[in-house]
Length: 168
Image (cartoon, rainbow, N blue to C red; front, side, top):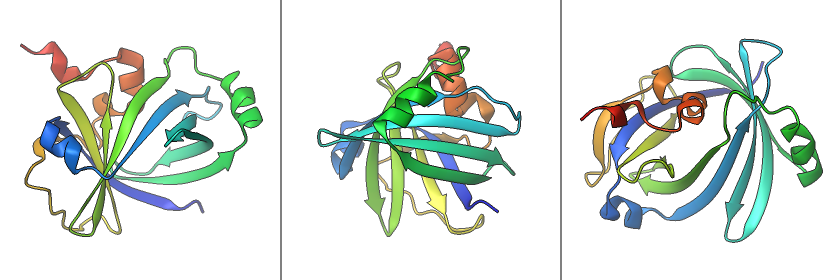
C-alpha cells in the first residue's frame, strides 16, 4: 500500500505580512500526465530553489476529500523530459510559487499563482484527520477548500483562475 497523505487546504488572501513571514520560496511547474486509470492522477514537477532544479514524478489515488495514497520519487532531467511527452493536453501546466511557513510546529505550504495577485492556497499535511490546526494570526483565511474539486491544482490548471475571481 502506498503512503497516505492527509492534508487540508484553504483559500487565503495574500498579504505582504504573510509573504515576509515565510522562510523558503520554491518555483514549481507542475504538468499533469494522461491517465490510463481514471482513479490515478499522474504528474511531473520541476522544483527550483536557490537556482537549483530537481524533478519529481507523482502518482495519487484519492481515498477521501482529505486523504490520498501518494507515491512520489525524484527523477532525472532525462526522465522528466520523456514523461512530458505524456502530458494531458486538456490541462495546461500549472506554474506556482510555493512558500513555506512554519508556525507552532506546523509546516504550512502557501501556493501563489501568476493568475492571481490577491488569492493563494494554503495546505497543511496532518498526522491524522482530526488533528487541531493552529493558524498564524497574520494569515487571512477566506474559506476551507479541502475536497472542493474547483480548487484542485488540476482544475486550476484547466481554468487558469480561481473560481472566486468570477464574483464581483
